[in-house]
Length: 266
Ligand SMILES: [Zn+2]
Ligand SMILES: [Zn+2]
Image: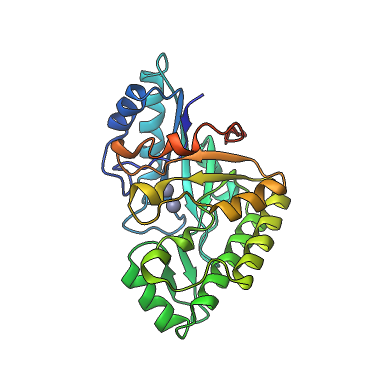
């Protein structure tokens, strides 16, 4: 079964409309897809759904699902942000929308100063955030990122953990930490333990490849192996922000039998 439950559209920061994404999915032979617009209720940002557009988004996707039901299965989800102390990807926050699933993701790390440092927006913003908010200590930033990943997995009720080592995105350009260092591998082990204990699905996300920043999925091969050892279930997604990227690099990752977990729990 060819599926992708992580896709963005013009409802948030994607380039194409939901209809255009559906047409691309049908052309590429998908059996099922899911939309996952960004949200960080009760807050919002320019790149997310707004509190007053969330209902219209869900209605739009449900209408599209009905229209195309004979050709493809279309689910409605949200990629919800975990921002320590401010936003939680928790079913209690989104239950009124009647979604099929929730992806929990971290795009910003709250520094000890209280300032939100964007993980994946622009390399210069990340470099500036580490310099200004973490005293230039990239290891402290990375540790804070994984501590937040564990906190999210342990304390929030959602289905799929999104791009769990997104912190690698700009490492090819910035080289701000060593992915083979003992302290980093220990962070991965601790985080793999927390993910396994949570019972949540972890996505293998090819979004960094389509954007040209890294030539691998999130999580890394080392992290994937640690997760697999602990029996964690995986799901393959492209995190597509355009119709062209809907199955980006799926030929590299899509044949593995263990990428078959379904995000749908309700
Ligand atoms: Zn994301
Ligand atoms: Zn996404």
